[in-house]
Length: 275
Image (cartoon, rainbow, N blue to C red; front, side):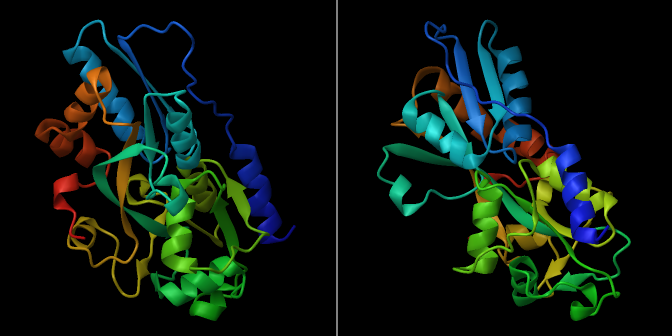
C-alpha cells in the first residue's frame, strides 16, 4: 500500500461527525450560540465556561463546524456569533457582518517528528501542496514519498493557507482531506512521510513545525509580524453586537481572558498583532 493511500485511510478513520448549532425557536435570551472555526473553538469554549461562572443563569453554547459554515450561520441568523480563522472574502463584506478580531495566530506547516527536514521555503511548500514535489528527497530529505494532508473547503485555515502559500494555484486533489485541526495533527503524527498545516496553537510534541523561509513559527516571530503565515482570529455578528453577545465579546477581549485563556490556548492577545 503506497503512502498516500495509507494516509488517506488513516485520515478516514479519524474523521469525526460534527454538527452545527442552529438556534431553536423560543430559545431564552439568556442563551448565546457561538459556532464556526475549529481553530477558535478552544478560546470560545473556555471563555464560555468562565463567562457562565461569572454570570449565573447565562448559557453560551459553542460548536466547531468550520469558518465558512460559521459565517453562513451568523449571516442567516441561526447563531448569534460566527467564528472564523480567515478574513471575510470580498463578497462576504456586503453581508452586514461586524468583524471583531479576538486573537493573533499563525499557520504552522507540520511534519512527523522523525522527518529530518526542519524548514522549507514558501515556494517549496507551494510546490508540495500542488503535487509538483512528491518525494522528500526533492527538498533535501530522505527518499520517502510525501503524504499530503489537507483541510476541507469549509475550513478557514485552508482558505488562509491557500491565500498565503498557493495564491491562484490549486491544491493537489489526491491529498487526504479532513474536517478538523485535531485530525490533521493526528494523521501527521502517525505517518512518517506526511505533511499538513494547522494553527500554531495546536502544535504539540506529536508533530514538528517547520520554519518557512528560514523563519520559525513561534510567539516572537508571529507577534512581530516576521513569520509569513500569521493571521487574526475573528468573531462575527450580524450588525453591531448587543445584549448577551456584546457582553460575551467584551469578556473575551478583556485583559484577563486575553492574557490567560488566549495565551493558554497557544495564541497571542489581539493587542500584540504586529501587522
